[in-house]
Structures are given as structure tokens and as C-alpha cells.
Amino acid sequence: MTAITLFGGIIAVLVLHFSLGRMGVSNYWRGVVSGAVPSFVFLGYSLFHAMTLDILSIHLALFLSTATVLTLVIGARKKSDGSGIHWTIKIMIVFFLILFIVDGAFVSISTNGVPPEVAAWFLPNADKNVVYTGFTGVTRHGEEAASAESRALKAQDEMRKLGWKIEIDGVNDLSVLPTAHNSLRVLVLDPQGMPVNGAKVGVEFLRSDTQQPTPIQYLTQQADGEYRGDLHLQAGGNWILRTIILIEGKQVQVDHDVKVATS
Image (cartoon, rainbow, N blue to C red; front, top):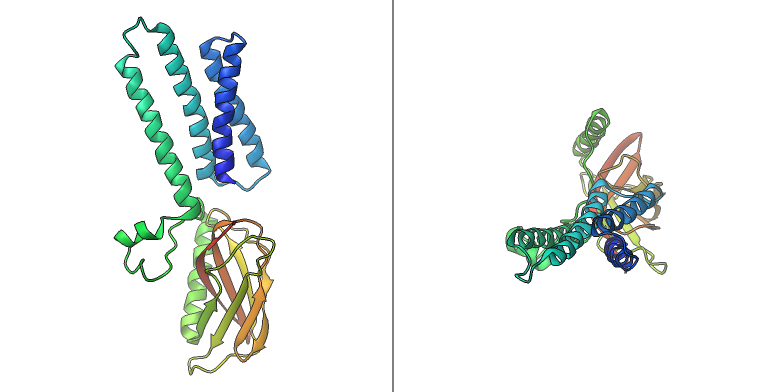
């Protein structure tokens, strides 16, 4: 979806700019209108769809940059006396082209992460294990963020004291396809390696830019210490999968960075 809105907006800028030119609108106002209209439309779209600030800012930067480059190029051609475009204009055009490439790379990495082949160059064991390099959103700040961090550390300390061993299978094959079952298996063992029965196991998804997780989905016990369930997902991208285990009045949680495929 990000690629569609990003390149769709750029195409809208191009169409508006040249359409206004055919209508006789001055080059300056062609740039203003072609940059402003897609930007305001996308801002309205973001109000009704979950949109992180990084994705929003990249869209607006590319829309406005595209309109600026078009205005500069067309203006330079009109003022040219046959000697070609001035070198300062060329530098600005190159700058914006580099900006397009860099912003596009950031969008790709934030959505899909660094390609495994590239990650293996500088991350240890990336060629042997699954590595998540995507970005789940803008990091929280303030009292609420500190409170969430405190709860996470408390849960980790509780798990360390209990000595439980938690094994989770199925997090590497998550998808939002209608036919995807997203089967998840959680194995809970006590410090002696014996299965823990009678636990209440649930999972929820969240991004780091929001404290509001998705509705919790509970798993059912199907064998000694083994809990299974099919997860229903509404959106792809990079998420934090939080597994919450409650037994005998004690609660622990385990967080995993996961990537949810859309195709």
C-alpha cells in the first residue's frame, strides 16, 4: 500500500502540473497547486488510516520535491537562451533525484527490512538465522513510554524468577492473505523441563509508535504444555508480537519482532 500511495501521488503531481500548463496557468502556480493538492489529499487520507509519522513525512517530502523539480526545470528551459540549463539548477535537480532514491530506500527498509543478503554483510549470523531489520514505527516518549518500559522490564524479571522456558513456532510465516491460517504454537516448560498445563496464553500485535495493541487472541491447549491457535491479521509490515502467559496468578510476556507478509 505504501508503494501505491507514494508513486500514485507522484504521478498525480506530474498529471496536475502538465494539465495546468495546457490550461495556460503560470509555471509558479503550476508548482504550487500540483504540490499542494496531492499533499492535502494524502493528509486527509492519513486521518482515516493508520499512518506513522515517518511514512507521512516521506510522502509529503516526495510530493513537494517533485513539484519543485518540475517547476525549476520548466522555468529554466523557458529562460534558457540556448546555452542550456544553468549549473545551479542542475545541482538542485541532482539533489532532489538523490532525495527520491534515499527516501524510497527508507520506505522499502521500514516496510520490508534490509534484504537478507545485504544484512549478512554487517550483522552477525544473519546468513544463518532470521533477522528483523524493519522499523515498526516512531518510538514513544514521555511518561506513558516510561510506564510501558517499566511493565516490560517487570515481566522479564518475573519470567527470570520463574525460570520458565518458552518456545514459539510460526512467527516466521505470518501473512494477511485471506487463505492464510497463521498457525502459532507456544510450548511452556517449567525449570525442570516439564510441561506447564492450565496456563492462559494469549497473543497481541502492536507497533512501537502506539501503546494500543490489537485485540488479544487466545490459544487453546492441545497437548501437555503445548498451546495452539490461528491468528487473524489485518495489515502487513513490521510488528511486535507479544505473547502473554498467565498461570497461578503470575504473568509473563515475551516480545518478538515479526514481519507480516501481504502477498
